[in-house]
Amino acid sequence: MRRHGRPLASAAALAIACLCLGTAAAHAAAVPNTRVQLPPTMHFFTVPLEPVTGRPAGAFGGSLEVAYSSIFQSEVARGGRNRFEADLEMLTVTPRLAWRPTDRLELGLAIPVHNAASGFLDRPIQDFHDAFDLPNGGREMVPNDRFRSSLVVDDRLVYQGEQRPGLGDLAVTQAWRLAGGPDAPFRLALRTGIELPTGDAGRGYGSGEIDLGAALAVTVEAGGFALHGQALWSLPGDLAGESRVETHAAYGFDVAVEAPILRDRLHLLAQVDGRTGFASGTGLEALDGSLLQLSGGFALRLGRAWLTLGLAEDGRTGTAPDVTFLIRLSPALD
Image (cartoon, rainbow, N blue to C red; front, side, top):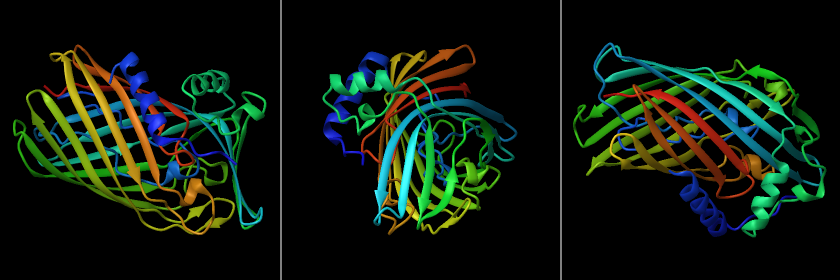
């Protein structure tokens, strides 16, 4: 069983890492937006945090996101009838497309492709945790860079992961700007989305059912700084792989701060994500537990695009990967 870390120690370690790396962005239209890559809840749809923009009708946009996570977790509950094993590294590449049919409505499509593998980060992560007196959660007790990925509930296999790439669940989103124009310091939007079960749920690459989500999002800008936030609601279908796990609605929040460092060329980023659990009664933290994930990074202006480099750490162990690295390329909006 993985030991729970100390949130304050995790936050301090992340802050030091962010100072070395950099961190958030005003007007970059690129927050860290690190999706929680913990099987199996990574496939339950939550509306991604994005700046609320005022782009004109007919505008096309998009981004390319690459996330790489190191995951180690082992849980046994209910007298051994429920078991969750995750010792892997997950690569997700997600092209995102966006189109504005009107100046207030934006439609989007996200197409994730996953690849699970044994990886190479076990030893560096152990060294990092040791340096900041953080728990390794038993990672040091097993051979480095091996592969395990499975979920068993009520002694029934839900999914068994494999080391090969596969398509994830496609997400179709819409954002309706309720208040604020392109140059307004305050902008408000309602975002909704539906995720289609195109991934292989039996391998841990999808949820197996249609998921719904909604969020009320706001962007506030002042003095070159920007604050992005949203309150979100998710209604996943049951986790339906080889067998079924009942789920319920989850609620959460995302908050990101952007600060310009070199005018319109370099911005620091910091983000906090939280939500309630997607299931109850399994005794498994990965399903029942509430999430806290801390992200930081920086956005660099490259001509007509922004390059975002980010790092995410689990603020509460058991519901998020130990570490996730993010690279995102998105068009500049000015």
